[in-house]
Image 1 (cartoon, rainbow, N blue to C red):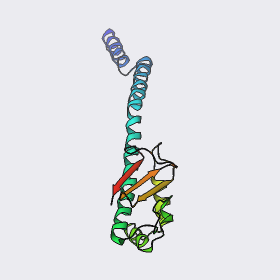
Image 2: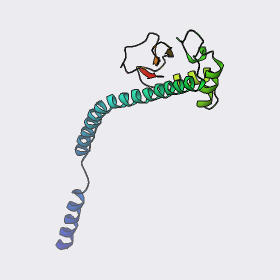
Image 3: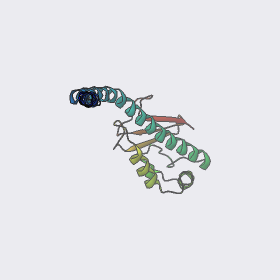
Length: 161
């Protein structure tokens, strides 16, 4: 009988040693929370840089399409004045036809709106897209916002005809 009780007590002690205590689980959860906080603070700036790069690609693609449309049409955007506030202000029919063909036959307003809503970075989100074609220098600039930023800024793309 003593042997049976001894075996029973030994089995009970073995069962007590299995699993984690509540304190151990709380410590692990606290360590995980700290690690998540540290990782998140390191990752967020890279996510914003990624959004800015994507926005620059959108502006660059638009600038390239405008450059191609002007080159293929062989004419200026608006006759004499080539400073534009948005794509919808391009009045030259050949340039409009070339640009809409490059952008899946969408209207200029749709192209402008689609490009504006695709911008996701804090710097460019919600800003309008402005286009400037300078026939004297042959430069085409596409940027976000109301005033032209300095060359090399993150929210401007420039091409030469």
